[in-house]
Structure formats: structure tokens, C-alpha cells
Image 1 (cartoon, rainbow, N blue to C red):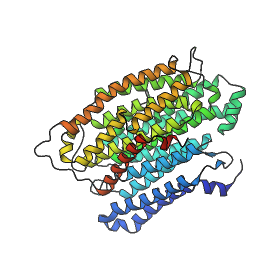
Image 2: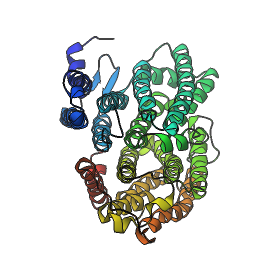
Image 3: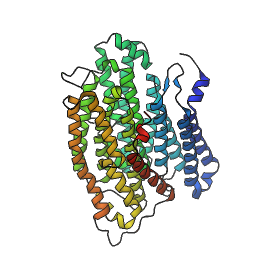
Image 4: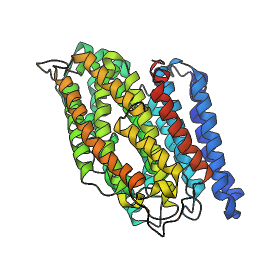
Length: 486
């Protein structure tokens, strides 16, 4: 491996800004803000946002640089857009930071969020099994801590414990699968792995694929590896839940796509037509179908708004996995568009929940009753986010689903097994529309209690919600703004 440290430093400028920002937040809090409790929240939020914006600017202007550091990283359009996307989603999530009265250590929370974003950014360009694992675990360990950050909530501690236990098991599966790949091919570089598998394959490769697919099924909250998601979405602080549901999913799916297609494409098999050939593609198709079914049907039974969003995320993971299946044949544009706009909608939905939680506990759907009277701004934003998740035109969620389904049909047509999955996804969209409308019914139609007070939304959260809603409308009206980049 060529040790080009100058090229590595140049390519990792966004990550350097994130790590430096995290250290600056901690140092400034220790030296100055800790002795001024009234300012701790504002200082942490300001410094964290500056670090993220600087990193986002570097990621957006860096340009494609190809392979870096002996092929350990690969920076192309997808990698740079994903880095920019996860940093942007992290900015929106950080703006939901609760006030110091509800979050005793805002600087620590901000620093861990920056470390998690560093992991997401590294995942976007990983072209090496070791880099991929280290980046994934940096992000995962940070998210475990963020999920349990609310020390006043037993649900937050339970969420962190379950997330950590499931995540630790998935990390073991992933590392074992990677070690088998290294043993089979003699390399940890995805390009060399692909070249070796194109020449010869071993039955042991099936074991490695099973391990890797199980691990990434957990990261994507796809069935049957989804059991952690409802509890984590319910118990984690709102900014942490927003980050888990948005940036984590975008970075994880891009890493999954890079690993499967450029690295393991020779072992893909096919679901484009019958007969189905053995490989990882039929397994991913089964996971996608199970996620669509379980997520949408499970959401029907939920009365807790956060758990409903969790089951909705499982269903969306199934649709996104369809995009992974098609990415190797028609490109990753539709997958990125869907994942990025889904992330905007989920950050926005959790932002509304965070604003409501600042004035009282929000658990059941009925807690949203009369939101249009208590805060027309929140109700309008929530309507945009939920309708986008439901796939209603002209919002971005509709075009995300349309682009993914169209890309799958380009690969195998409507008569193939992949086409059957598209039909299933479209049919279950009607089920999804029902439970999404239950949320809007409470927020826009149900009457407000006599003693309900108006909801005050802090300025950072208000800006976050406004930006997310505006981008969803913009990308929906003008989808080529993102899709045209590919």
C-alpha cells in the first residue's frame, strides 16, 4: 500500500474538521462554559454547528479524487455526496439539542455526535474491509452512547443497552465475515477481493455472505434483524433518534452497496428473472420483502408515535434494499435520492416530537391532538414530513420511491421476482398511507384539550424544521437537482 499521507490529509479534511470540532467543544466547555451553566447549551450548539458547516463545505467542494492511500478510500460522486448528506443531516439533528435543563451535558452530547458523523463520513468512502469496520464501529459506539444519554429516563438506558447488545453481536458477525473474506482472497481491499472472486469462488464464501448480510441487516433495521429499532426510537433522546434514523441509514446503505457490488458483485446471483441463481441478491430480496411486510403491518398496531416511526423505518429499509439490488446495474442515484430525502423527513418528524417534548411528554398519537391550534408552524411541517414519508406527490418521498421502483423494473421487468417485490411495495404503500394519516388526523383534525398550552419552538429547532421541510418540497418539485448529479 502506498503511504501517501499528503493525499490522505487532503481527502480527510472534512473528518479533520469534525474531530477538531469535537475536541474544541470539549475543551471550551471544560475551560470556560462549565463555570457558566446558563451558556453551556448555546456554546456547545454554536461550536458544533460551526464544525459541521466547515466539514460540510470541505466535503461539498473537495471533488472526486479517486483512490486514496493505496485504495483504502475511494472518493467518487457517491462518496462526496454522501459525506455532504450525512453532515447536513447531522446539522439538522444537532439543532434539536434540548436545553440544559433537560440535557445536563450538552458539550459531551455534541462531541459524541461529531464523532458519530466522522464515522458516517468515513463509511461513505471506505474501500477496504478494515477501514469499513473501524468507521462503522466508530459511528456505532457513538450512537450507543447518544441513545442512553438521557440519565433521567429509564427508557433511554434500556434503549442504549438493547442497541449495544444487538450492535455488539452484529459487529462480531461482520468481523467474522470479513475475516473469512480475507482468508479466501488474501486481501482486505475491495478491488482485489472482486478480482479474486471473479476467477474462483469457494463454498466458504456462502458462510461469509451470511455473516455480512446479517450484520448489515441490523445496521439497516431490516427484518428479521429489526428488534432493537422500536425500543431505541422510543427511548433515545430526539436528536439521537433523528441521527440514527437518518444519517446512520444513509451512510450504512452506501457502505453496504459499495461492499456488495464493487467488492462481491461476482457472487451476486440474480433475482431479475427466473430461475433465480444462488448469491447474495436473492437473500437481500428476501430481507427486503420481509421488511416491507413486517414494517407496514407492525406499524398498524402502534399507538406510540415513536414506535410507529420505527416500524415505518423498517418498511422503508425494505424499499431501500430494493435500491441496493438495482444500484449495481443502473447506478446508485435513486438509492441516494431516496435515502437522503427519507433522512430529511425523519429528522423533521423527530424535530416536531422534540419541540413537543420540551413542553411535556409525548408518547401516544393522542398527544398530538390539536397541534394545528397549539402551533400551526409545527403542524404544517409535520404534514410535509409525514406526507413525504407516505409518498404523496409532489413531495420528495414520492419521487424517491418512484425512482427506486423504476430502477428495479429496469433491471428485471415486472414479470421477474424483483418486479413482484415492487408490486408488493406499491400495494403496501396503501397500508402505510393509512397509519400515516392517523398521525395527521390527530395533528390537524382532532380537537385540542382545554388546558393545552401553545408550543414554543426554539429558534435553532425552528430553523432545522424549516430547512428540512423546504428541501423536501424543493427536491420533490425538482428531483433532477439530486438525481442529475449521477
